[in-house]
Image (cartoon, rainbow, N blue to C red; front, side, top):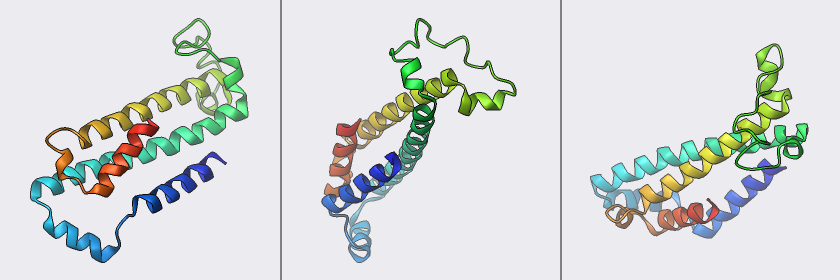
Amino acid sequence: MALATYGALLWTGFDILGIPQEASIKDQVKKLSKDALRHAQKLRSTSLVLAGLTFCTAASGGLVAGNDAGRAYNTWPTMGDEWIPSEIMDLVPWQRNLTENTATVQFNHRILGTTTAFTALYLVGAGLSRNRGMLLTPQARNGLYAVGIAA
């Protein structure tokens, strides 16, 4: 359900941002300088990393919900009284911990969520920095604003 909601939000967001059609994109690319194209490529690769992290975080959230891990460790940033729970690798074989151990599932989800948030903030900071922000199209700038608000 979370992934369907995320997909619907992306779809709606792209409609609102008014992503230009293919012919329009080619015309805009011809007008951009080499520096602007390098900046756009860096933002694109970071955006793909952010999308992957968001997907992994949402999938990890499903494991947290399935294990009721949110009820077992409902304090933040510590998990109970520890930063890293002592029972994080209790199950044998070790691979079972990734999906069945409440402590490991919750810890992985927290790490993924924090990494996703910091990656989003990095993307916004790198994209809208003083020197680089002027190189963006209005659609890209609005997209970065949206990412910054969501982060």
